[in-house]
Image (cartoon, rainbow, N blue to C red; front, side, top):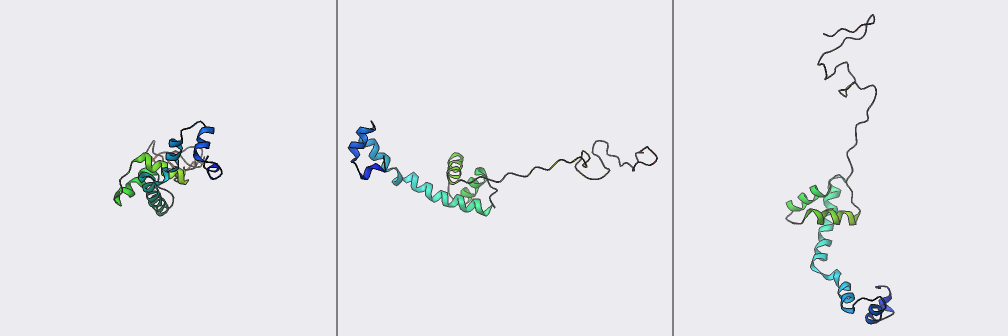
Length: 129
């Protein structure tokens, strides 16, 4: 409708699409509203905070950064602005499980389950200390 507005009048477009003319005009003026202007300002601060965190902060932490700067806004608003800007926090890497790791995550002969050190197998048996 916005693309065709330059070729046709608002009344003709509203009638063709079965919407009210006043609703269409109000929709066109949405960008000038106070909340939209504030969103543009917040979006710049969100991008700055996100980049300073090396793309690791999600919306809760970015919101705390904004609050420290004196800008109060809701968690869902920050999440929406981040989503619209294509900002997604990097997830933590999971530790790869290896068969060489012995239950406690270390490549040693120590194990949390028994809290004993085992001597390497000599002669077919291992003996706890």
